[in-house]
Length: 556
Image (cartoon, rainbow, N blue to C red; front, side, top):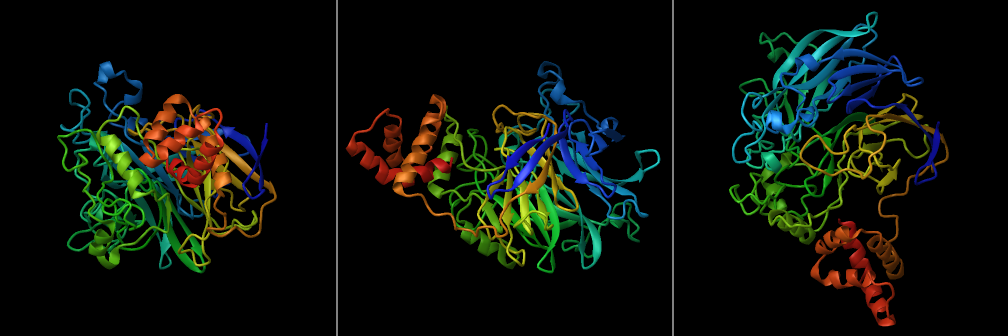
């Protein structure tokens, strides 16, 4: 039964579940055959789904190619608590000429765990990490047999982990020729079970924390794998390298579009505590991680991209992530190659972030919270079907179950609008596809209510697990998207009302957590809002301080 959903600018959509109970759909793509193509991260299956009926055809089952068991289904008492990798079968890209002579489907999946035969968790000692390996493969689509066949390995040595594998694939042109792009995360090197693992996002000789570029078809090089690497890649001096850009944390979103007459490659990336990023990716450029988080604005000065209570790990924050002296100085040292993101969700204050890292390091009984989105994918909406949407970035999120829309400037090099939010619900949106005419959006949701990595953040009461949900545009909307900064700041009276609503909606434990995250001067105001009634003097005091309190609460 279709439901009606209304967007923030009056857009009307119908919502319909096409299919459900997939084994963590990771990728959903609208194919040239007008079917939805999906990968299942844990199920290791590739399928075609009829968007009208939900009928599903499995094209490929890669579970036998995985050289380790389903650790997520094996009791810890049996396997020693070995981790499942973040993802599994991840990205998929369909060749633009899939049905017209080049029936190629590109997949990346994790196939090996170095600790599989070791006792216990199989992790390196002293939080040295979990070492997996991923493979990039080209298959051929046999439409008559409804199978993917004739695998060719492009690369089988891509480093992977139980955290931050990124894993998106995309075919996009450079100078009129198509290439295959692959985002690889920093493998969580510096946090949780990988807290003692060296981080290589700034090392151009490593594939960790990079966007890679491959040939979709082999060139004439003699090497088995060299032939899949473009000879003009920016870091191929002395040896072939697929590295296209560096300094990425966990770019799970990767998308291309022509905006303002120029082709643009964009990523969406998870931030550590704040500053989820949208980047405009260019050849050979450096996006700063872990030396600059978000903009080079100083909010991480003196901090790091992680913190832990493990005193055996290096630095004041107990992590292999470097302590950031100042972001501004780091950006200057990176030189002309450094690029700021075009958007950050959201640049929290240095004071607040210091509180978060300190509470994390001190293993506070009330674990800190912070305002972020966990962007899981990215698409560029270039159609004209929905008023005001043309040339907008669409970003599904995991943490709060929503689709974010950011309107681009006319040339596509910056964001012109405030953050607009759609389709909120108790789900973890993993990926997004669109019908060619732009009237239908297809969102994939995780099966699990928490991430496959070590983070435990998820919408409460997760519903519609392992689903593909169709949102069909019906009517409404505004031809012009309100520009950035057009929303007025609340008055002190409005701020008091909004802050009071937020505070009184919290459960007792959440009240303690939120209060602990506030500056000391704001905590007595927080306490006032918990009282059933306020004296005139208390109300006047609360109202004077309400704008600052509301801002502090929203950082969490």
